[in-house]
Image (cartoon, rainbow, N blue to C red; front, side, top):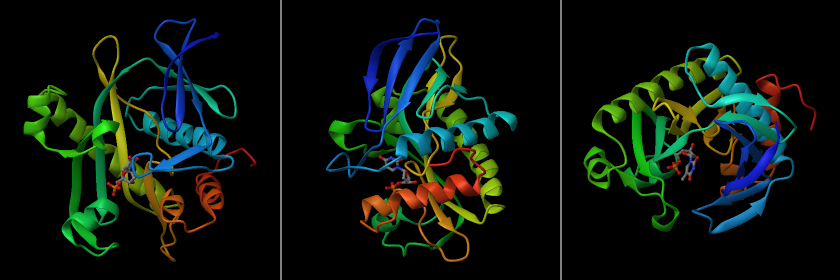
Length: 239
Ligand code: TMP
């Protein structure tokens, strides 16, 4: 298989067409942004770390029956995925109050939630990815009601699988963001990445942040935190 022209460059990844139909070539970058691109930087080794971390999580989910776009890793920073058309909705799942939820509702960060919260955000950089509800989604024509039921169902299942897996590695899954896509056949499957860029991971004992909040909040040791996540989930690469 060969890499063809670039289809898209996002903040953390590039997507290329390939010589094989229905397969995309993804390259993970070291670039890091926060606050809708206002803060820009680089995290040394992030492309390599997130490529491996995401591959591990997406394989785990496949094993547990959650179909997703991952096919195979082909280099330290690249993976082949199934072609999908991304649904422009960011699905956020929250187990503990943090980040924008804590701010919006005036809750203390770290507050345990009595139930899981699923939120939808409109994936639109110009608007800064605003929080939206089912009615906004219907009027914007982003997804059908039945598709939202499916997104929520898959997101909750993914949460249960990842929460339990990470709990056994002494990691608390505070919250995370998912993106889904439609295959050419019209099936909705999980896409994008699952990494410290898109999840909040806290050490179960010290509550130390092991994710991109270290970059967003200038806490230092960003690369070390990503390496620690990979170490705990048993990654094979040495970075
Ligand atoms: P938030 O608390 O800032 O809304 O973030 C919730 C979760 O979503 C957190 O785990 C980080 C992730 N996230 C992204 O992956 N991309 C984004 O653009 C934002 C704002 C959050």
